[in-house]
Length: 238
Image (cartoon, rainbow, N blue to C red; front, side):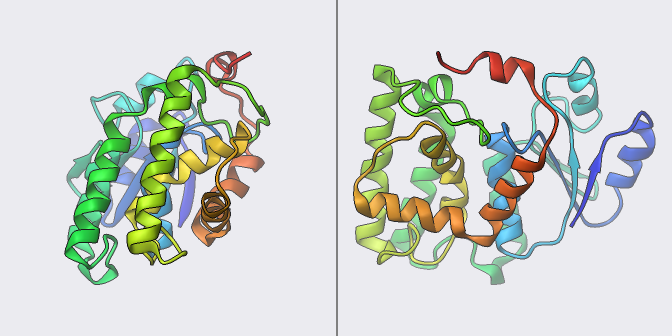
C-alpha cells in the first residue's frame, strides 16, 4: 500500500487515483473513525490499495475532498470509474468483489447479526460520537461520560457480550476477524482514550482488537502523525 498526501496539483492526483486498482481516500488517522473502518478491513484481508490522506480541518479540506466525491466526507473508495463514498457501502462492495476472503462471517445467522450490529453502529451511538470523539493520541480517562455516552457504552457492551458468547468463542466478535471487528475498532480506540472500564472478557476483546496487525498498524501511523486538526481537539470534553 502506498500513501499519498495531496499536493497542490489536485488534477494530477485525481488522475493518478483513477488508475486501475483501488484507492481509499481517508482523513487523519488520529481522528477519522469512519476512515479507520474500511482501511482496517482492507488491510486485515490483504486487499491491495493506494491510500490518499486528506488532512481534516484545513482551509482547503472541503475542496480537496470534493475532487473525489460530492458528499464532502471521507472515506471514499475509488474503484476505476466507480466512486463509493460511504464506509459501510465500501465494506459491502469489497465483500462482494472478494468473496473468497470471507469478510463477513460464513454462518448465515452470524452474518445476519454482523450486518445488524454494523448498521446499528453506522446509524446510532450519537452520544458516544459527540461526547467521546476519537483521538488516539489523547488520554482522557473519565471524560465525556454524559448520560447519552454512558447509555451507548452499555449498549455496545451488550452487543459485544452477545456476539462473543454466541459466535466469537473468545476470539473476535464472530470467531475470525471480520468487517464487524473493523467497524467497532474505532470504539475500542475511544474506550482506550477515555479509560472506559469494561468486564474482563470485553477488556480482553479490546486487547485482541488492538493487537491485530491491521489495527496496530493504524494506531502506529496515527501516533506518528504530526498534523493537528484544531477543531477536533477543541471539541474534546473538559
